[in-house]
Every structure is written in C-alpha cells, then in structure tokens.
Image (cartoon, each protein chain N blue to C red):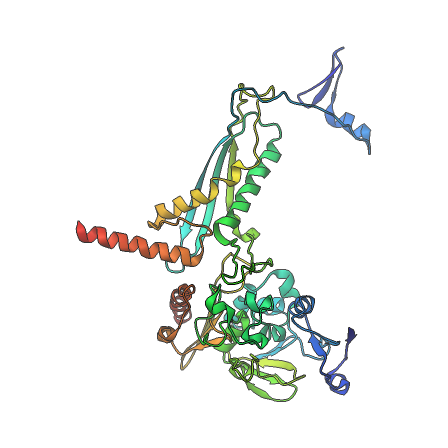
Length: 280
Length: 205
C-alpha cells in the first residue's frame, strides 16, 4: 500500500483520483476498517494538508478534530457536547469532523461481514437477529443505525456542507440504501468535504443515552437547537442516517423492531428534556 | 537471630535498626524469602463472608442507573496485605459493574456466531462507571483454620455486587430486575411492570 501526502488542494487535484484511493485524515475509522478488510486501498491519500482545519466564525474546517470543537467556546453547545460525549479523548484528538460525518455503522453484522444488504446481499441479518442497538426509523431494507453524534448536532444546527465540487445542506449528504444503490452517502468518487457552515442558534443542547457512562455509541442521541422560528431536532442512533425530527410527535411514526422499542421511549424522554433545556 | 517488629529489625542481642535504613543499604539487591502455611483443617470447610450495600440513583424516564457508592465489608480472617486486599475488593466491584450493566455476549440466533467480538461492542466498564467504593476488612484471624488464620479473597468481592445494585434499584423504584446485564430496556420494562403492579394493587384495595 502506498501513502501520498499532497500539500495543497491543487496538489490533491493534480494527483488524479484512482479507483484504489482512500482519503486518510485522523484514521480512527479508516485504519480499523483497513485492518478488518472492510475497506481495501491501494493508495492512501493523506488529506491533512488539503482540508482546512480550525473554526472561523460559523465555518468549521473539515479537518478540525473533535477535541478542538469540544473545547471551542465559539461552537454551539449541541456540537460541543456531541463531540465531548463521542468516543474517548485519544480518538477525539485524532478524529476529524469530516471523517466523523462519514463513519460507517456499528452494526455487528456489517462489521463482521455477514452478506447483508449494505454488503450487497439480499437480507438484513439484524432484523431477524440481534438488533437492540439498531434503527427504529427507515429500517425496512437495512436496520443499521448511524453512529455519529456530531452529525445529529450539525443537522439540528442547519449545517451546510462545502466540498471541493459543490455546496449543499447536510441532509443531502446522506441517503437511505436501496436495492439498486447500497450507499449511505451521496459523495461522488474522490469528492472531499472541505468545510461545514452552521446557523448560530439562540440555544442548543445534545443529550445521549449509552450503555455505559463514556466511550460508547449512542443508543439514542438527541440534538435540539432553538431559532427565532422554532426548535430543530435531530437524532443519532435511530436510523441508517442521522435523523431530523419535525417534532416529538413524529416519534409515533417510529417502527421499532421487537428488541429496540425502548429507543422510542428514550427518544421521547431525551427529546422532552432537550426541548425544555433550549426553551429556558 | 533477627526479628521484625514496629518497623525495626531487632537482634536477639539487643540491637535494633529502622527497616528503611537496612533496606537502603541493599541498593539493587533483593531479599527473597520463602514460607508456607499449614494445611486446611480436616473435616471443616473454609468459608468466607462479606456484605455489600449499594446506593443508586435511577432515572425513571431513561432507565439510566448511577451507582453512587458501594460499601463492602469482607471477612477473610487475618489480613496479611491490607493494600492488596483493598485493591482486590475494588477490582472485584469494578469488574462486577461490567457484568451488572454493560457486558453482554450476544450471538446471532441463526448462525450461532458471536456478534460482540470487539471492545466497542462488548462493553467493559470505564473509569466513569466506577462508583465510590468504601471497603472495610474485618481482620479477625479465623482460629479454626490454618496457622495463619487467613482465608481467600479472590472471588468474594465480585459475587454480591450485582445483587446489591438490583436490590437498591428495587428499593428506590419498585422495579424488579432479575437478569443481567441491567440494560436500559431491562430497567424501563421492569419500571413498567412495577407501575402495573401498583395500579392493580391500588385497584383491588
């Protein structure tokens, strides 16, 4: 495997994308997936000097680490707390916000390479098997749950994404897998997330239920952000993608599996608290 | 003939030296000792005793349980190494926090394949999960036993913890949890059943 380190966006573009390329930033998700054979790469393109890092006003460089966001007083509380409650300090020091948005599901069937629908197979093993950590929304085809806490926070914060090719709202980054197309994001081959832009809220919060007090993926994470025109809600751990919620009433549309109905209850309880917290 | 007492090495001819003075002379040298205890007595079983009490706070809406404190009192006969004994108790309780709340081996019902194979799927307790641990050792030699009067402390500290926590949860909320680990769904379900029991009891009263 080859490692190249372009020193600018121009150099990155000049490399010319190849099919065996994988972009490497913090590596906290990529390296384990390479090790486990979930991703194959012929060339790792280290993008540390390509992607902006740091916060300017309401713009976040995609190379900013979770630890930097967690400690930045200019970042809305929902995103700071989502970063603080994610992973462990070591992982937050390495992991970047751009990579965090693109991390893969923790579905054990997918991680263990069962021939599931995300791997191109014709069955979701979780639906008939172990699914206590899985999706309660949009889980018909694939019941995997999206693991990112910051993605839910950024969704509630009305974030927009700027790549090296275009700009779009964060919800456009994600798609539900279908029989014809099993991908969970809409990024094109070789497209890089460069920056995120959030809308500053009047108040915001992120609440998370986990199996232990720290260093666990969300059973349910709830982000709430209050704006002049109302409160925006988004959830982590409840669907194959980060999940925007119109209001708490929308939880009635959840379709939990036999062993994960408790997630609806958790989302209701945390959602009520999150709304109360930003409405004070 | 030398003996050890009161932090001093004492000679039978009357001299005595502070222990740290003598060991300081050793520099990189080591003192190795060998010893043996007498056999366990015949016709008698060796039993250890202990009690643990848990203090918990339960969030009845989210099923989150915070173990605020565990009090542990263990009788292991004569305590030979107090620091080691306390560490053993603390370690047992921390390990018990894992099987009480978060460690679960899940397998796929159709293939039998174990699914929780990594340390992010099989969740050991973190430092944040460790409660305040107050431990006390009875430290009374058991004269029926060996010439040392001491007993084992390997397993005893891990055994009562989950039951103490489950009892504390029941005492605090009425929820009766009967299987491990005590997950969010387990607690929320037990709370629902407790409310139902209360409703039925109120209705028939």
